[in-house]
Image 1 (tube, protein in one colour):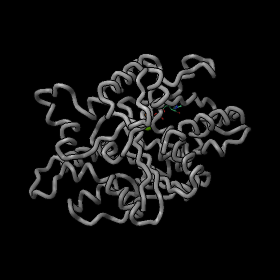
Image 2 (tube, rainbow, N blue to C red):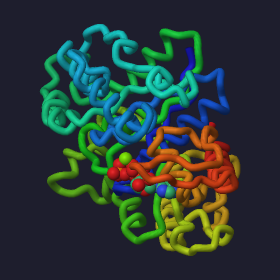
Image 3 (cartoon, rainbow, N blue to C red):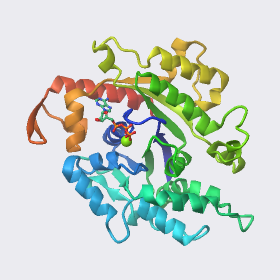
Image 4 (tube, helix red, strand yellow):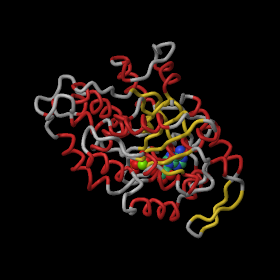
Length: 356
Ligand SMILES: Nc1ncnc2c1ncn2[C@@H]1O[C@H](COP(=O)(O)OP(=O)(O)OP(=O)(O)O)[C@@H](O)[C@H]1O
Ligand SMILES: [Mg+2]
């Protein structure tokens, strides 16, 4: 009935924790909101968050493979292929032929977590998606670029309309701004942007703004081809950054308590973007005027999850299901300490508090 929110977890930078955050956010949000259905759409061909949600390790990997190799894959590729083959204007397929319940594969996941699984075939399929989007408009009512870019937004609407329930949607993404990332971003109302403390993370956030909103002045040749230009032309709203997650910053300064939610350089860059283009970010009740206020309003730190995080991701166990003890990881017995798990849960809950 109502879509509460849709968030894409994206930064134009690899390895910043997008999939890990998608996995933990989805499971924790579902635990905290048992009356809300949580949908994860995995639009990264690596399918890392799908693997975690479906049980982690080799079990999760096998489940993903099984879904990808069904006659009609129960994955993003299966869904995209059916919709694109049907053509613009065709009735949408039944989403439940593609979306699976995470709990049917991984008993540790709450039963209100659903997944449209990632699929490695997104990569070879990408040229076909791009070609469909670049097709000329043959009638005034159907604009291929817009139709293709709205496929997942329409899927979300269809799921929400079919059931008398509320939904929270998290979309995992690939760092590159490939066509499937464009589709991911186009389906989300808001962005969650993880950053690390290093310089490349800061540079990537700048690249992100250019990819999403365009360059000033536009490039004389590429300027008209860009996502930013096309989105504007077709009246597609580009999602704003809702929260910046300073991920694993503790690994750089060691002391568990003395970490900032953002490195200084990254905060400067983001605050500069905010100062010139506040609409790149979601609105706050009080507009932050200083760097410190900006950090408070938009940045959340996610501590390094250390052993607890490794074991949790490897076994597809939500943090709440991580009891103190030894766990088997690739044949090694790894000790997890309850206090460390509690710290991770608290860090995650701080992030969740900013997600509404
Ligand atoms: N808060 C954290 N604490 C500990 N380890 C983490 C944390 N966040 C991410 N990691 C680890 O960092 C690595 C990269 O994380 P992840 O795969 O989630 O990044 P990503 O942004 O999804 O990468 P890609 O761009 O390849 O999709 C993984 O090994 C993951 O376990
Ligand atoms: Mg990932």
